[in-house]
Image (tube, rainbow, N blue to C red; front, side, top):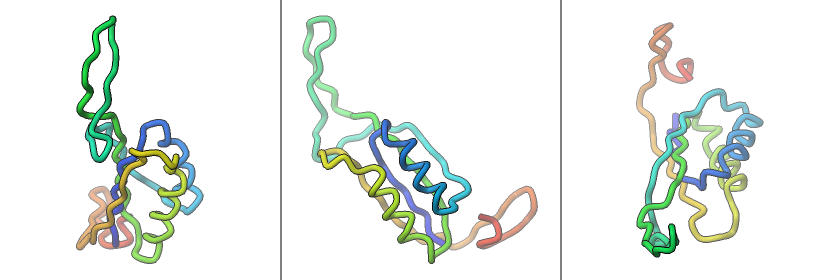
Length: 112
């Protein structure tokens, strides 16, 4: 099994969710986060005063899928989240050694 973690722009969340649903992904976790990469933040003006925003809002999406589905999930996320502008985000794929569904006691891929 693979854990796919993506950091994307918040307004792209619905498109990514729809792309994953079309692949048969049944569940995912979404967290609102802040961070920066090559963007290095941005300058904004509030009530006439200019200030530096060091951390930009992002959305972290986590989904655990079967090994065979991981590449398709990554491609779907990348396509749906792409704006061709700096700050589109990143996707990481990690191995999952074990999974357990607490309610039923199912383990491994059955727990997904």
